[in-house]
Structure formats: structure tokens, C-alpha cells
Length: 79
Image (cartoon, rainbow, N blue to C red):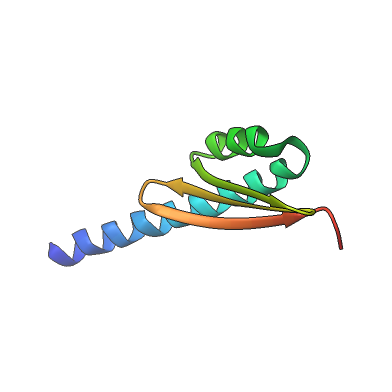
């Protein structure tokens, strides 16, 4: 029983990490054209909450939280 619970918790944590990364990727891309507000909307639409937004030159970096999982993604409009 203990193994089953541990396996279920590990699976849930993996799903949260994946959802956080997906939300961060989408938010970073949205932030290129729409800034922090667009990034936050996309993070939310993907089940996350944007906790940081940094824009330097042509690179946007966001940090998104989904449950206990945190993911960071960057996007650029350059090569």
C-alpha cells in the first residue's frame, strides 16, 4: 500500500512539472508580443500562475508555478 501511495504521489508530481513547463513555454511565447499581461493570461489558461517575468532585449523569460512545481522558459524573437 505504501508503494502504491508513493507511486501515485510521484506520478502527480511529474504531471505538475510537465503542466508547469507547458504553461511556462506558452507564457514565454505570448510575452514576446503581448508583454507580461499576455504571458500571465497564457500561464493561467494552461493551469499555472506566472510568478516572474523578465524582458531583456529580445528575450522574454518567465517563471510559472503549477501546484508545487515551478518551471522557467525563455523565448526570443531573434535567431
